[in-house]
Image 1 (tube, rainbow, N blue to C red):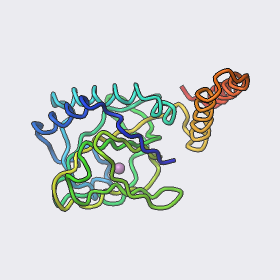
Image 2: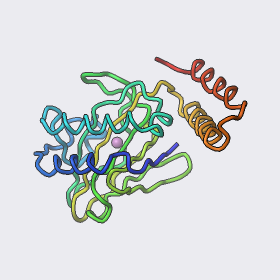
Image 3: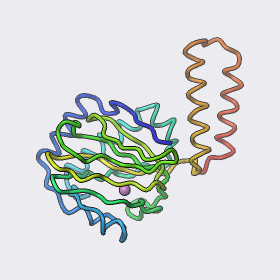
Length: 223
Ligand code: NI
């Protein structure tokens, strides 16, 4: 499942993040790539221990955990500290799959990948995130402050940037629900319950649907 979530950052959160990017010093992005991905990764990245990285991580994590759509879709167990990347003209990231397990201060399985766009689409040329999804090839370029989530097992690439610069935060989630199809079913069921609640809050079926949701979650959750 590929899901775009618009405006996950508030206006102030986005302005803060962009201000931090403007004054930060970037390193070669290959330091955090796996062996195969490092051969095709060509971007810049904020060092994990930079002061800006700590503040940016807080901004992104707060935004994610406060967003009901993200929580419903990802059912997160671990959300890693994001990587903060900048692509300037001539940079790209060739076709690759992300490492299944990331080892660091927290070691976790990557079930879901996220890209949070911090540049507006008109601020750079090229730079589309291209994902080879179950339903075909998707080319993604979202407004600043918006997020795309996709299964980490997908092959993906970033098209070459040919003008301007593309700033993004990328991160991975270990979900309580390892299986993408099961996670997708729970997301659809939750969306249906929320819709019914909004339209007919007194419906007696809501209780039994909620019981089904929670009992599936109980059956499948890995915590
Ligand atoms: Ni990747």
